Image (cartoon, rainbow, N blue to C red; front, side):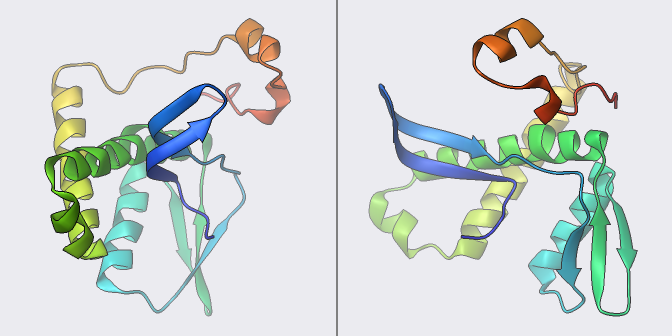
Length: 155
């Protein structure tokens, strides 16, 4: 169990729903510490986080990633969601045997390529980015408290 932006779940059960799902993790605006020693994959992720707008500071013992409402929105909505869809597309297009023999790096590389290409197409079509859409009445009806969310900030 480690914190992530999102997860692709190939079989999920909740109440009356069962099937594949994408889980997007709730995030805080607190700094995120990362070690100074990074694998090549983590270096690329740090670069993607910087492109998403996160402020990244290198300290003596660690990197501190400082998210903002806008940078979290960029990471979760415009990159992670598409990345997790990429995992579903990749899984769908593979046999179970092929999927199970692929390395996590191969799976991640596919999902990153898929997300980058789809994000490019959505931007070119003028679909993305789009302004936050908040329906406070529905949030309250669903039992959510509006103070849990940072929608009052604008990108």
